[in-house]
Image 1 (cartoon, rainbow, N blue to C red):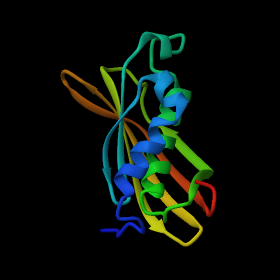
Image 2 (tube, helix red, strand yellow):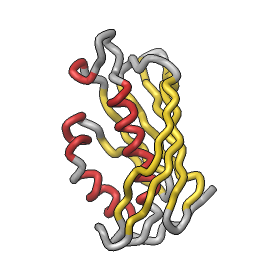
Image 3 (spheres, helix red, strand yellow):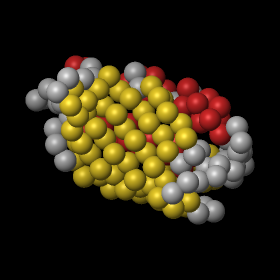
Image 4 (cartoon, one colour):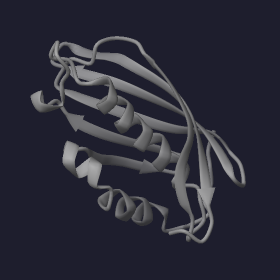
Length: 146
């Protein structure tokens, strides 16, 4: 479903906001695509972000997808708004092993205050890619809180 952003300069606003998110810097995540209601974030695999079995830690996977759905919602909000997560539900489908995590956030329904999103996490490797997580999320737009 095509969405029309409330801010014609939404790409710059999303990218500027992402650049201020310190946890994404700490993890080494990159915002690779911004479209109205859809965002992609890529995280190269790093051993220091794994759990005891060598898989990318579930908390890291969830954090990256949370940012993807949050920025997908934010892309449709008017200037001067901030976005926060209200509710997240994540199904971890498979261990996160591979070369990089690709998180895609998509808006399902954008309301005046609440936006419902779907997030996917995919691990890419030389032999293909595998979906490792599926998230449903509700985001809130807070006015006058840029």
